[in-house]
Length: 90
Image 1 (cartoon, rainbow, N blue to C red):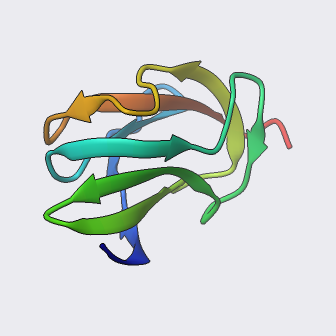
Image 2 (cartoon, rainbow, N blue to C red):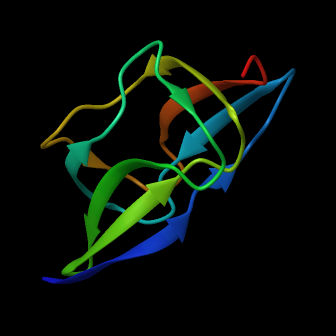
């Protein structure tokens, strides 16, 4: 696999929340956060392997992780929600 490259998440922010969705179908290689983790814009949330490349999925906002909807090793489809970040609170 190629070196990890930052890949922006699909940002579907609603009501102060960022729902991090997968930009391309693939497999989750690693989840770098847990519920309650405080993240900043640009922090790596998880690693996705898609098309034989590893991509870092990064937060588009500052906030706190409130839900993780995937796990290491999971197969995911484009647009599938992965992580919910409650904006603010830093």
